[in-house]
Image 1 (cartoon, rainbow, N blue to C red):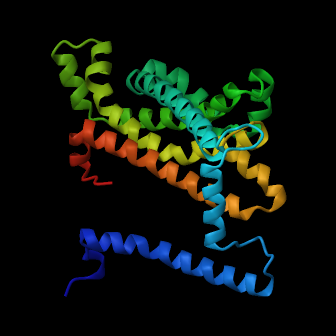
Image 2 (cartoon, rainbow, N blue to C red):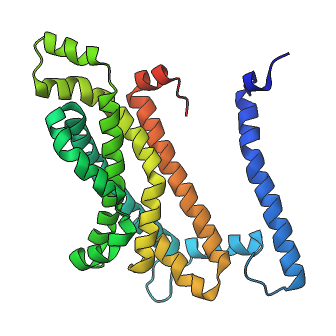
Image 3 (cartoon, one colour):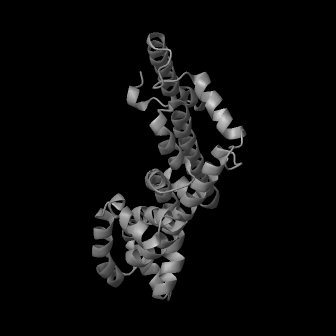
Length: 275
């Protein structure tokens, strides 16, 4: 008889097991919603799924009378633009600095203390400084994402570079490779897929910074809309927006995973990563 620790579900079973928690949460929510609405039909804390679906459909299809824009798509495109730019800047800086710091001990000795200190600064604490320095426009929101995510990427790539087998570096130098060739031919190919994985891990943090920045100073965006309607206790809008943000974050994560598997199959085959 197999031990429980050795049982592996089939592909179909994995889907069913993965859906089970969501079904349980849905049943729990509907039960609580029905109970609250039975006591108070005007309760706004736990709206019915049909009411949330109606509000979401309205936001996704009806133009705003004041601006002439469809709010859901205006907010979505604004937030996606900010997070894509911010994370892309973070990834580029993280890759460059991570390779240099991880591959060159002299650079690592100079930068590691600074990177460590910067990574410990709560990005939300410097948000007022960013608003003063860059204004309340797009630059401050993108800067917050970059400042919050970049140190994590640098430290992750630096650590991965340090853990690479010394034999690879020695063999490359034995064959006549210069320092730059070692960085570009040995470290860069191996750190690029690691960068995609680290970026996937940092996406949740990036969304947190984006929503916080939009809530404080923005005219459109998913975070702006949530905090705008909270004063009216419009949970029929807030909950669908939270679910929409979660879906967008999941799609971005899967896009990065698909790109990594497509571009670097050897990396995932070596790790046995099927995620």
